Length: 125
Image (tube, rainbow, N blue to C red; front, side, top):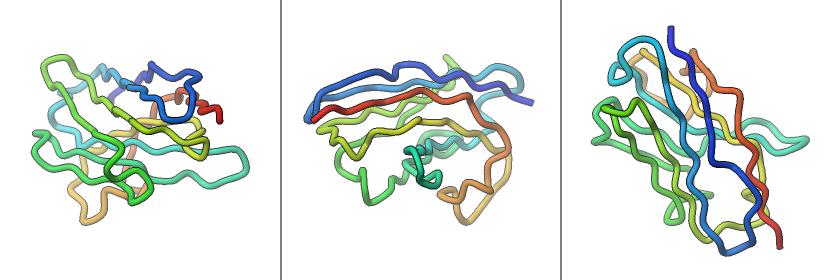
């Protein structure tokens, strides 16, 4: 089992940048593929980005591609999501997620077994 704790959310103006972090505790962090998802009020949870166990492979949703970078530091048990050129529509609770599974689709929230409590990101116009 792994416990996930996000941090780094906050209020930022449109066009600004923010980095959210997720620290994992429990079993060996490098054994987990990690993902970031977000959920805005009244909307379904949506995929943002995912990263492989080694960090060598990443993918991002089209909505954030070119504006975000997912990375991880296995020595620090931490995964990061750097977001630039933020837009009001990026406003959401951001969740990190972890999975031991090997999947064809890390953009599917059902692939993940462990979730953090979320961190609020608000982008003002």
